[in-house]
Length: 303
Image (cartoon, rainbow, N blue to C red; front, side, top):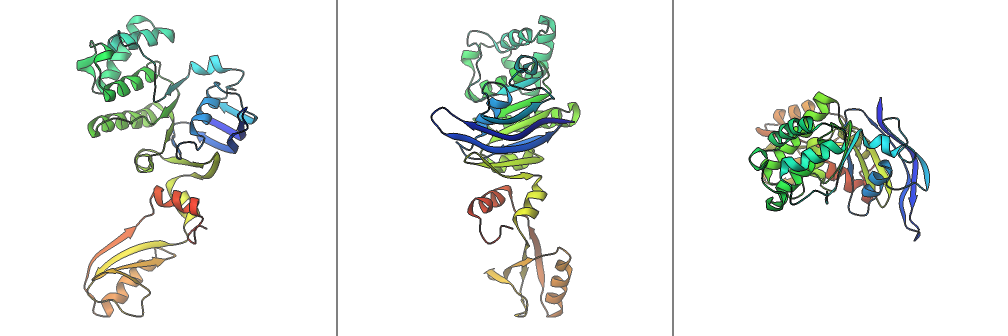
């Protein structure tokens, strides 16, 4: 089943600004979907539309089969939303906040506490469970905000820069929890970020946005195939036959472009037959950043 469906979605604000321009996409259940682009690309507007906070100008949406416009209240029982400015109570402790929000979702006090302590442990906040929120650091607040979002076990999770302000250790614990939710509990995660390298580490599907338009959609390998018509390879060797079409990067280091991966053994064989001693062969996979900027620039490499 698809967790999120969007068809020809458009949003024009009253001042005439078109925030979304004919967006269509599908996110299967259990996917960590990276919705990527710079500020102003349309990410936050999309999340607000999918949660019934805004109404679309045109188009259709479904989240877990529900219409966010007419069934928002029912939908919110099965979704969680983490923004950069999540509201909680400074005079409550960490576990008090989680108890409070758990009970808002219909959980008992005991259920809220059990679930809350489980999340605090996974996010490295057990020692701060009884500490008032006003004493939390920025990173601790961010992790508690995620725990609050997860308290009622949402089936779809909307995250806006979930690791903003976190140190590497905290980022690791958040990522491990998100991967666990996706793989073991089948939670669908709709992750909005402008950090392409971070998204490449954790997401398995992507939607690349710019100025309200969807540039491309798919897995990393699908995006690579659609965006670039060749592969790259770096070879370190003391001899490079002039007959081979290579680009010298520095002394004894050469770059090759080729269409099929099957060409690599032939290339290596040709160098060795000409007396070359090869010290290293490094395939160069195009990153999400390479793909995104190639799509923006519409350069020669874009298919």
